[in-house]
Each structure stands twice: as C-alpha cells, then as structure tokens.
Length: 290
Image (cartoon, rainbow, N blue to C red; front, side, top):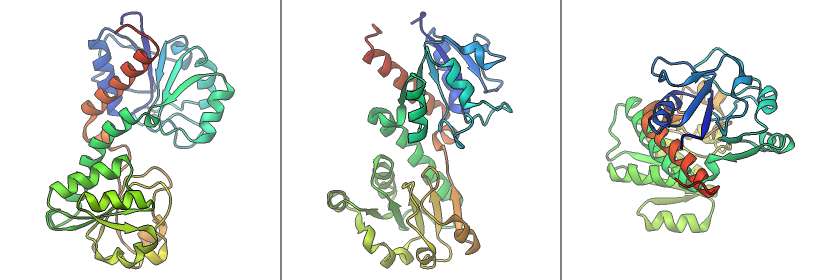
C-alpha cells in the first residue's frame, strides 16, 4: 500500500493513534490541524492546508464540524475553514463523520467524493462498543451506587443503544429501553429488558438511577425532567442537540454528564483500529488489491 497517501485533518487522540498505525502499515501520512508528541517522525506535518492537496484520501475528525464553518480540531489552535478545505479536496476521497445534510450538499456541490463513515454499519457498530464502555465508565464515576441492581434507562435502540443495553444487562443492571418502533419494542422484550414505548415514557421516568440517551432529538422537556429522581445520573451520548432541555436540566441541578466522542477519549487505540478497518473496507470496495 506504499502508493496510497492519506491526510488526516483535525481530530482527537484516536487520530494520533491512527497516524502510528498507518505508518506501521507503510502508508504515506500527512497531517494538518493536529499536534501531539506521539505523532511518528515519518509523518509529514503540513504548515498549511494547501500542502495536503493531492492526497488519495483525507480523513476528517469525529464529528467533522461542530459549527458548519470550521473543521473540528481539538488538538490544535488552528482555525480550519470548511470553505478553504473544499478548495483543496477536489481530487481526494474524503472520509467524514456525522455529516449533516448541509455538509453533504456542499461536498456534492464541490464535486468531492466522500463517505460518512458512520453510515457504514460495519464501522458504526464497532464504534458503538467503546462508546458503550465509556458510557458505563462515566456512569460509575458519577454515582455513589453500583450499576449492579440499579435501574437503568436507555433512550433509543439503535446501534449504540443495543450494545449499551446488552453490556448494562451483563453487569446485573435492571435495564429498560425506550423505543418508538413496535418491532424494536418486541426485540427489547425478547432480550430480557423492559420495553417502554415513547408515548408511555413519562410514566416511568421517576424510577431510574441512570438515564443514557442515544437520540439526537430533544425528547425530555421540562415536564419530563420534573419527573426525574433527584440523584439520577443522565449520560448524554447523542450528538447535538442531545435528548434533553439542557438549560432546565442545569436549573434543576440534575447530574448531567456530557459524553461526546467517547471512543477517542476512553479507547483511542481501539478507535484508531476501527478507522483503519474503515479505510481498508473502502479501498477494497474500490478494487484495491490488499
């Protein structure tokens, strides 16, 4: 794979570990908007965004952007303009993450080949594992009770919700899962969890010691928050805007624990390997002989 060049723009510690892994595999790596002492000396550290022009693949951070104006670069003091990025990415394949519709439209408008890696089930399911483990870690750090025998609510039964409910159940927690779909509710019951349809959620909110949200839509309003146990721990796993009225949550002094980008925080090496597997999958789908 020596003829493959990869540029990494922005990102957290998982992307530093990805640099190390790519260098080990003999891949030419350039970086911009990320700084860390562990970055291998073989990596080309670019002084400007223009220097990555022409790289075969550009891997962006998770999430790609938080404000639709700049690329997310928590390990750098550089402001990386998305508009400037579009100008240099025309000849590359862009791997982004958590791309909203506006960002997707702009990539298409600039005729850039792209893929949102979180649309790939093979990757998103693997990524849900460190997310779920990190959520459990945060819950244990923010409570004075064990998860064993506690009452836990998981909001949403997507990829992350499924794995999180499974792991909580394995720890001996009494797990309830909220879902809209009657099919999901049937699966929830089959797996041994308590199913809670969305329309019935408020009748149960006062029961839980821990609430884990995986839904990026506000479903917990003031009325719902008023039903919480005073010492509940709420773990926010969803992307913006999250699942709760955060201002009212703070006003009520609810223990609200934001938990964005957990794989890059709690398991950066595992998260880097997942990103590498994503790159391999895309290369194979494009006919590369690996």
